[in-house]
Length: 409
Image (tube, rainbow, N blue to C red):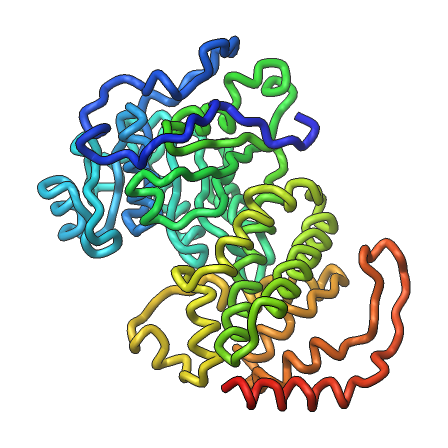
């Protein structure tokens, strides 16, 4: 593999797929593979998606449209019944019609009984508990893809490591990338990375590896999957981008504009790369879909919960009043603490993530905190040049940024 992300399907641009076009397909689309494809990789015959939220539903709909027998498990009987009867999930994906071939259930044992593969698609804080529940019912040896972005509090474990600790006899990987659930659900072109450890046997016969088979299972005319063996790089990208997106939202909420966002995104990528490399991941993975791609998307649109939270906080809205007082899970909140805890333990400096942590958990003032970020000692880029100089106008820089923010507000 050499760390490269390998495309498994040639993508042909097409109009977004509508449910009426795809819902009754029983075979895989002819455009899923190039005509000269010489591999013998096959999709999984059946897939169970655990988690009927927006992203779980979107992934389940994608697999069903690709021709895979797909079962979606959800806790809510109301949501399950609506998916089965109306072919919609108005709670999590309003105004999105789902394929009629997609079936839902609230019975986890029944959902897992005949699964050829499983995807766990729940918030990062629930991965351990849900993995434990899955372990009680899943057939031995069934591969599992985790679709959550974060680092577990207290342990510092990545999401796949959390799942592995509860699912010892299963191959566990991750599917991640720059995605909004609604766009995926309605058929807008989307690309992700499917990452699993590659054993010696997998390298001899990659067609049988879980990474390739998950990619094949999801790939359609509008959904493109790449394959990687760098779980650390993929997962660190997905976790850190949430925190950087909160920072971008805060800066926009305060009144700063594109220069500031570009700086935060670029330096955020550096923080991703340094942490990933420290944990054994590769910089080139972070430069791909799961790192730079995901960060760019999340930091560029208020559709992102993370950026939206930062935007509201930057505008002076109290946390309890954000999202009009609704309880919305924002992964970057918990990640801000767990990521910086891990970075401190490893001796890694992550100024942007630390700034977000101070604002969220220590009551630090947004403008003063980011003014301090801008007046840090002058460093080299790239960091391979080892130098650092005191900022010549650190106090003046803080005052100037505060005045600029006041004028823009």
